[in-house]
Length: 305
Image: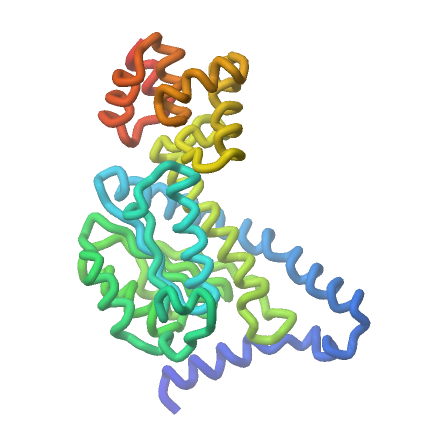
């Protein structure tokens, strides 16, 4: 038996959950209680690797400040969660869609239905990274529950070859992916209630980690003020009202005044706040934001007062 086959067999054995052998025979309430109990252990598993997550966040933020981009690479559930996280960055933080991108095995089609065979390809992720002109300023984050998915491994290997920053996210402890990435986030959430179904605890862990990474990186890039989304894209009525509340909260003004300021800057909260606090017009506020793309609102206000 080859080393790769032996590793795979060990991983598969590790997925087998002895504690839920009678799962399908349980009453419905006992089923959901078992799942809930299993899910409750995920946060504590992640807590064990918080220092590794923090280190990765700081390294990623530095690359992005220098003009780099962030690429998530994953297959199946891992890839779908990556797509969700990258898709939320532009509306939440006002970033370009180019800044945080996702590469999922099987492409857009895989978001709606399983395209599982493509995860064994060692060329597909590399081809996609080449198409997107990956360079040494960029970041490649490989996501794989077991850490052995060929699609993800090859993407991270290519990132290393190019000189990009590489990060591994695995959820059953360290795997092959951990051996090649520069930064490693490898909690062990334990075997799934449904043996091998990584859309469950592993998926929850990946969602939590990706949320931490993107949110904290954006904070380091100045896209968050206290706990407010000052660069939110107000694209619907709910978000228009949220933008008004943000400006009202920061400036200590009523909603009507906040709305009048926002109308002058296409409902961009940061610019409206700068107008009010610095007593400047919309054009001046826009120029400050454009000149300082990775500066916190506090720093902008301090520098220009």
